[in-house]
Length: 74
Image (tube, rainbow, N blue to C red; front, side, top):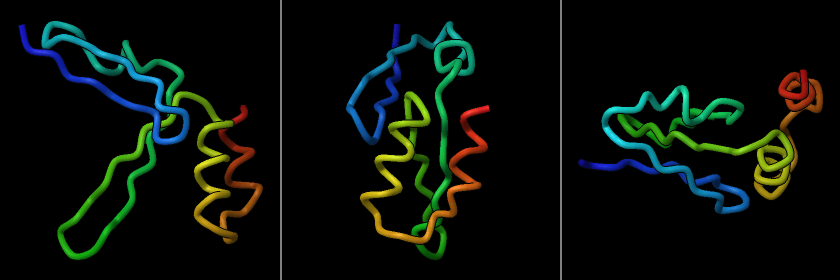
């Protein structure tokens, strides 16, 4: 049985799931940000909660509007 894992980019929390499980069920409550890294490069960043997303975004520098981050609290 093969397993895949998702790691929070901020705190390092890890969630594993098998091929028989749906990722959407194991990652309920998690957040994913898709970031373009250049031509043909797409990076999916996973976060276990909005606080981790906020910490990661703050560390990357200013420019993420608070209204965007507050939308994940709802």
